[in-house]
Length: 59
Length: 367
Image (cartoon, rainbow over all chains, first blue to last red; front, side, top):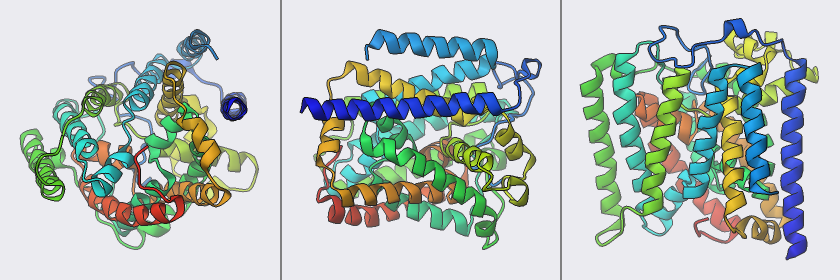
């Protein structure tokens, strides 16, 4: 049982390492973030339409 | 891993987002952690709730979801009426939606988790769900690549209740439809059932709070699927096996922009990462052997079927304009007709998915 628990923990570790590596790789290769384009903290009441994408949108 | 170490790592990542990305993204990461911790601690599984309703005539999970839909709508619709810059989850009623919702409903039962379920269970360390996540991402990407072809089969413009009728009527119609669902559930489960259990109720309340925060901060409702497709899209584009400029979906200005910039700027990606982290944080506290026993109990055939279901789930969620979160919760709570088309079709698919699940996994028990 302990062996199984260790195997499951190892799988979790691999999962998180791969996810972290992906995020780091993506951050390194992507266009530099321009913080002067930072959107307001709260979109509601800002008067600015959201720029994010959502799965409900067809485009 | 000790819980304090994970807390420190999450705090460091939050600080990084705060200093090197945007304050909004850092706060949305916290919202994601809240969503993930709630989903995991309450075991708020959309898939499980439906399964319990069908196989055990237990309405508690589905009633918790109705409560979540009602509470979220009560907050989201007035906000949409008050702040025109906030965006509803308006998907187009279409052949794509009909096919996608039905197939998704079946696949989520086989994979034992919808979009949010896959995330929080992967965060809890369930091996099958950790394996499903990249395939869900690949499926979501493939669905987005083919989306315009599916839409060409037939669609109408999205219908928003708030935009069409105003907030009061939109709330009344939504409330009446939710009440109608409750009546149908009552007819199915019969008398003498426990409708509300603590975990489903406090889970619904907290999810409402975090989903509303997502809407207020990001300007768009909570979603899961887009982030997954984006992750796979980045990988295949970088590998040189996909040309986004030749694809109708990914050549759109906003999608092309997301492909080229850090995923840390994408709203759904940052909340997805938060959900994984929040669920992992919960897993550090609870003594739970189910993740271990899943590793022990699944056969090779069950692994293969589960992973395939994950791929199908990703593809169909893109066709359906969202999963239980993006289409059902966000769609219905923001007054989108597509959410009300999605729900019965996904439920019909679930009836098929449960048959497949019982045949392959030899059980119908809740998680």
